[in-house]
Image (cartoon, rainbow, N blue to C red):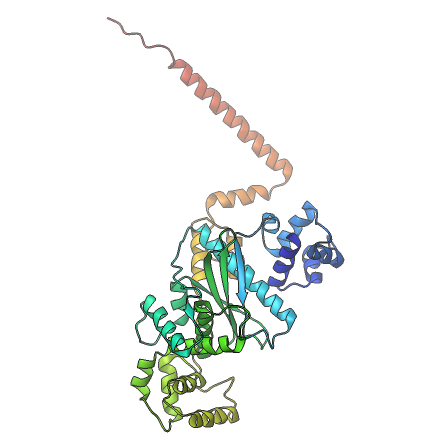
Length: 396
């Protein structure tokens, strides 16, 4: 257990085994770290403490079992993503999701985990369209375009995690379940950090589809991907609204119109064309013509008029709240956010840090003085109680 935990945290922090030993000041060798991770050797208490410090966690986090079990569901990245990179990404996600669950628990924020996990069938496109509509109804989104996909997810208890990964990675989803009962307690959608907003929004909606659609293991992965694509299009651009803005049948469509639709629905030109094909608004032939045109212009990865990416804010807001309420330290807040946190530490914390920075002899003198003062105070208190402690005598 401890070996798996060390490896998971090391990969999540982006450290090689050599890098971890360097952060530990050379206390152990790379070979020793390898043996710990494989379960062939158990680190001593001293080594565990140094490992925890190097990995940015408490020692108990290496020994104890997590209160949640993390299930990562990477569909799109499996085929083309190198195995080592996939393991690294999944480790980052598992640790990030676990830390968010812990932080939310620390601030006692129940949030609004309002997600019908794996509640809708995915074996027919009309059922997928219906599922997208039901989720929008449950979240009271109406039919209008969604202003912020990130905020919509975070408002309903779905964490949004961004990371830097290889070019083969687009997005994936993860679920945190109670390790005792196996009940889902949190979910996250994870996207590549450096993508335009229109692609980011579609990726988030696609992974939302993986979370709410029933996609049992062992089935056809491509059909699940197609269903999640259909869900994303239906969630971002409901059929009724698309037909209202485009028409029920089109024989041709111009680029300027597609750019206006892109800005309205927050979807890429390619995703909009696919949505119109799915709704039988345009023909297969017109769709193919546009796909060829887009490829020739080099727009498959970089379209004209890119939309700005949306920024998650839940983690920042909750970490700053926890720091302000003295639930976590400044150092912990900065580890959560990966940035310097402004603000004033409480006076007692400043005094404690100053005390701990003193030499041991100075600390002992201060403690002895405080003990003597406390003893005098207790003696004086006993004398006062003695003066007033006699029986009360009533005189005639």
